[in-house]
Image 1 (cartoon, rainbow, N blue to C red):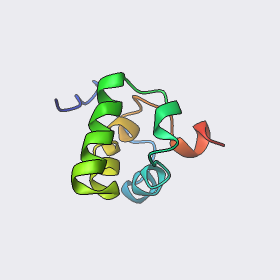
Image 2: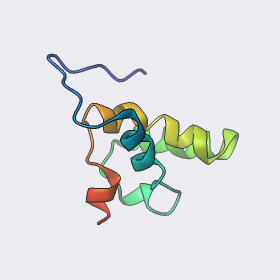
Image 3: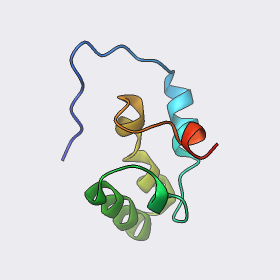
Image 4: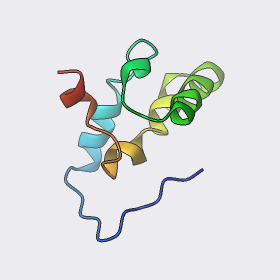
Length: 76
């Protein structure tokens, strides 16, 4: 299911910053990342089927729209 854009959305980071943020996600740390169980299952499924970049790509809208914290902030 697509991620909906919040009303009156103003980007707080550049596209490159978002891409850099999702590069921090992997199979080990995604289980502790504060996202829904269904989004976590999507991450695992895409990782196993298409590789790590496909799994990270589905996290771009979540980070971009602020539905989850930046991985760099969350993981320190």
